[in-house]
Amino acid sequence: MASSPITIKHTKSGAQFTIYPYGAHVTSVKTAEGKELLFLSRDAILDGSKAIRGGIPLCFPQFGQPDQSMPQHGFLRNNYWREVENSRFDDDVSAGISMELSLKDVVNSRGGKWDTDTTLDAKCTYSVKILPDGFTTTICMYNLGEESFNFQVLLHNYFLVQDRMALNGDVCNVKGLEGYAVDDKVSGEKYVCDKPVTIPQKLIIDRVYDPPKETIDLNLTISAGPSHNLSLTASGEVDGKLVSVSGVVWNPHEEKAKGSSLYKYVCDM
Picture 1 (spheres, helix red, strand yellow):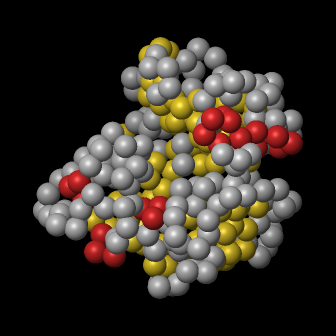
Picture 2 (cartoon, helix red, strand yellow):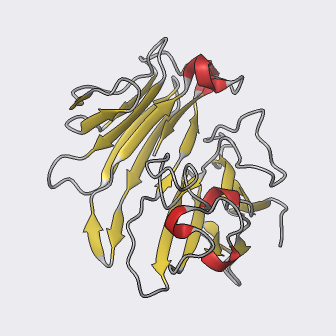
């Protein structure tokens, strides 16, 4: 199984990204101007012995650990993926690659109804495309068995914040979640968001934002520094039917950061 990182470069613009087969984990995205968009912890382990911290970890069949019989965040991020044959491309508009993981190849982080004795069967494909000024990611889950299953899937984006300014709400904030129902996993509070989201000075932030009725896609503007603004759009469908997309904003602050430079990133999923 290939383990070396793969760098995909858009020849026409110079924009590029790096993806590791372990976890199909994107660790770097650079625009045509060379601006890095993602944060990677200086303590990230890149040898396939544990999940990579930073970049874009993939979570399935659960986010967090609501089901204690399964590992936190599931198994996508802790197994080696295969490159889809003939999936690489580089044309005038963009460049990209696709990876895939079949349940039969999952050896780490199984449990619960997805343990080795499961009657379920599934496959995941993950496609990443780089453009001169941004990137797109597409994750698809295929049920290959006869049983249906409930699941959560999430792309855990660590966006790089310029100049260690994650705690400066004037230049680091998330807009577009106004009107969303908030489930604060730290305080236990539930309320409706009524202003842009900022990172508290002395608190861990871990909040789930569920959309108002009839809101389907997630559309955010992320300010990640004085001259670093990102637009994020997320959409989803199940069995061909559009479904609403929730968001998560997270920063562990000093208590849980363990030296990973908490001032340098904000996570939006």
